[in-house]
Image (cartoon, rainbow, N blue to C red; front, side):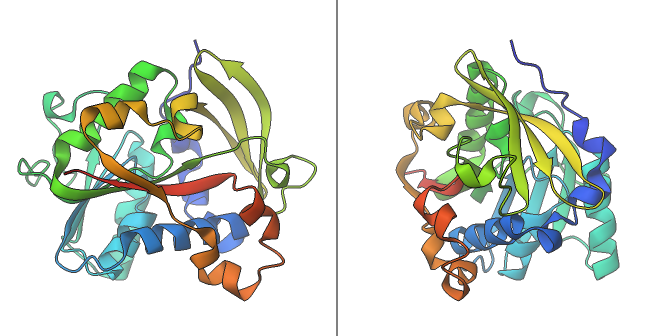
Length: 265
């Protein structure tokens, strides 16, 4: 059984927040999420595993009325709240500490500011960016998807970035072409476990896992739960790839990750 410390992000939360400005990989990641979000004018969004709120802030900038961020790391949430305070915004992003592998409805989840809990009537969009890469078992993965589907309104959209090929050459330790690399890759029941090394100053690493259902895009669990119309955002549609197709050619030919979208009928 693989075990990933659920609060490992507490130790480097402030540094993690700066990844987008320091490594090309994170820049492309942000643009892929932006394409999947599209125009969010007036929408309500739930961001599961949302950490310091990077995607949540982009959703707000795209017009979202409110984004509720749920994460297990108290420190990541603290960094996110402080960032919002510096931006002078209040009430557009709410912060909730909870374990998204377990039913959120049974955890008495309350907002960090003491406000109301999660929206009982659901959300127009549910995001799960990198969330599945912390599922250490099929039971964890089932719990994550169950929360996603239960909080997604009929007609609502799901989106989330995830690993697709942990063995991609551009993610190897000898390359790390886009600023990140995956090391110590090993098989676990139903998937793989590995370390993510972030080539920033100072560098840091964290452990992640991914189930075959996720990285092979089988998605048998969400399909069984009722989601339909699964698709992957094309990296060639991002401004980063359009501006420098030669640099991103290795990623386009063999994507190590992708934003998967679906909807609830």
